[in-house]
Image (cartoon, rainbow, N blue to C red; front, side):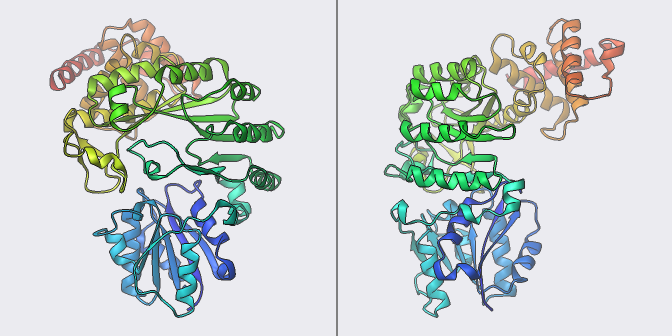
Length: 501
């Protein structure tokens, strides 16, 4: 047996694991015998194990994340039964804290916590040299960034042609938002800008056009932000797409001026509002100037060419359905292109756990450890928000319902869409697998049953359906609103109001 495999289970094929590429780039003398093999959720654990064994490795390193920890544990369990001689090392955010009792850690021979750029190669060298350490847990050494070998040469031509290219101009985060593992960082550490721009140029020269920055705070240091934006402004093309995560309340005029020079469709900004409630923000150590954040979002939406995706988190300690709803309405009024409604997760090691007792936070015991209920939200409330989020993706975030959505969000957008979500679930008992024709029919029936002008509803839904490129015809497009559909819809709307009052 010889060789080292670096592997992980990605959420989808288009997500190329940056962490694995960092590890291989820093393997030193072992780099030639180290290989990256990636899988996706949905691959059978036995099939993954078989593929890994085909290379007869001596050591396998697994990248473990909240979305793949259970599947990874199943794969390692199989490997330990059929090939116990293979050394298994796990690392990544999910195994960097609270390792005791984790099945995936118990199954592994070694666990690397935190940064693995230096520690994992050293561990591999010891194992290969016959100096296998006795201790199981290895705390990752954090080296100066200039000492870390660049990972970008590890992207293959297939990666560049068919996958997202993840890059980072900095690591860490200076903020202390307690729901996030970055709250444990002391600060943010920037890579050398000139060196990083050289790496971007090499990727661009190889044909990379879809760049996703994993920096938590791209606009923290405006000088570096401007240099990176200028790099892309000098290389505009029809297929260029660049994703950044922005601090919502920090958008100086120089940065606005650079953003405004881009054509539409190139920049995609993810902005984490998470909550507008000042008391909740203080409780979770989140520093955010809400007035500045609101003004910046309004500018980004109204005066910039960027696509705007904004995150809200439901289930934060002390936030109830009413305050979350007001926050959603405040955000919807700013008209971002997408609002991502997420449910709070208790990440292992994140400081949010300190509120568990005081705010009666009850989390799922299984990954991804979503909150099930709080002192302010019942289990039923959380379930309603989960369905709200799913249906919002189908209707609000899909971009398909430009004409219908204003009718649906009349008055209070959150209350109105929550009513639709309750009604739709009562009618279908489904949150997935809605054909477009069926979804259009549900929207039509709900709006008519709720008292919206039937002709206006039919015209809006039909126009949205046809604009999507669909070739079929909806029933109400030719025969008008069906009385039986109208009656049935009204009955279920009354039922939803009664059940969820």
